[in-house]
Length: 202
Image (tube, rainbow, N blue to C red; front, side, top):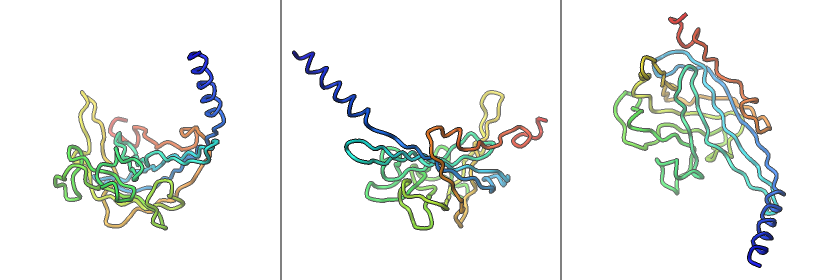
C-alpha cells in the first residue's frame, strides 16, 4: 500500500512539474575601454533571466551579471540581494548589484591592499535598478578596484587576469535582449585571437 501511495505522489509531482514552462532571455552588451594596464580592449557584459510559469503562477529568476575582458581569463561576477551567499560584501538589508572584491586578487584604484569582501563594483541603469531582473536598456558600470596582478604564470604559459580599468565616471553600455535558451548561440564571443592578445607570438 505504501508503495502505491509513493507511486501516486511521484506521478503527481511529475505531472505538476511537467506543466511548468520556462522562457529564457539573454541580455548582453559590448563596449571598448582600457583595462587596468592601459590596453584598449573589448568588453562583454551579459546575464540571463528566466520566466517560469506553472500552476503556482509566474516566477522570475536571474543569473549573475558577468563582465569579461578581451584576452583575459578573469570574469567579474556581479550579484544582487537574491544571491546572499555569493554577495558577501553587503548586509542582507542593503540592495544593489555589486562585485565583491577579493583581497588575494584585487587592490584599490591606487594599487593598495583592500579588505576582503568590500564593494569593488556596482551596476545599475538609468532608472536606478537594484536587481538584475530590473536592469533594462543602457546600464552603468562603476569599478573602483583593479587586479593586484594583471597576469599569472601557469607553468610556462602566461595567463592574463586583467579587467576593466577603475573610473570615477560610470561606463555606459547599451544592451540587447534575445529570447532563447542557447546563450552561446545568441551572444557573440570576444575576439581572443593571438594577433590581438599576443601580437609578439606571430
